[in-house]
Image (cartoon, rainbow, N blue to C red):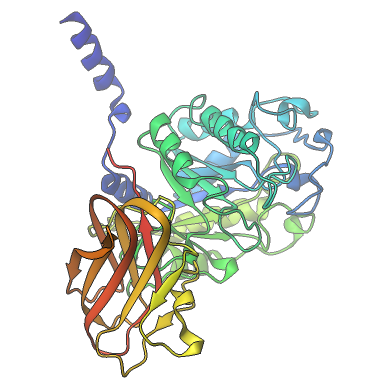
Length: 458
């Protein structure tokens, strides 16, 4: 009885320890509306966003670092949270890590910047998030050379960040599945990292900054859909139904450059009108990067712009209720690059495009085929419990999903929806392949990707 009372007392004093469902966490994120991205790391001291990966740690020395200034600046703009680059692509850690000597504690500065940041933002009543790069050029964690030791390093560093700094609302990860990093979700296993994050902090969202590669109608490998405007990624304001994040730097670059103090920042009125006001109506949070200088302070021109944003943005309407959202796909796509077969298609739209991990290419049935079909074959039996079909033209009206069992095709599911992304979750089965048979369509069907997954479920 006494232990039960102590347990209840702990939870009543610390309600954040109670795990929320994912939809509520996504709504909470949308409700935050506006935050400060803080790109501050060893690139700040080199004038290059991608510095020499073996740059001397002694370069990092922000003698006047004041995270309280950052937090007050964020508050002046009516921001509700911050997100700091704990580790960027060159692998330099700005927290007291036990995993590597390449970090702030071996610099001239020797102070835990992550701790100072989270303490300062919490004093101002602001939420805290962290950015972490999977790509790590210093530790040679790059495509083609990833070892079990690299995976252990990533897990150990994330464990430190989600164990030693209190409640972290989101971990924003960069460098996965991007054309410039080329690190796949299999090389650094996404699901393992995702489960680790949820085990350490059940209420921490995991966000992949490169999620815009995937269709806007479904969450693949992220809890929140992200759009980097500078990379040409823009949310579909008229049709978005997913919890989303759009990011943009207030300056030209993400990390501080010597030209920043004398170069105009982006217009506050435009940032409010074309970003904040529009995004908040379509379930999208806006994060504006403000890069501290080499002293560890935000420049005056950026400070003034933030104050003006706070005056211009009324923030007088609640966020709209987030529609029901399918749980994100976080497991390995076991259909990717497997042998495929199909009914008749022209050579420019052959079946190989239906599982090439590229949503810009598609298998397309020839119009003369009465009942088109497409199948994925495994070299040996596999277990799976989820299938997704990306219907490029949104033309498939009625279809059947079958799986190969003991040499015969058995019906697994049927569908009559016209959604662009068709998602089927079911009890786990074992089979040698999956086939979709299309019984009715409004145009010759085209499938960009047929995905098959063996999801971990509680």
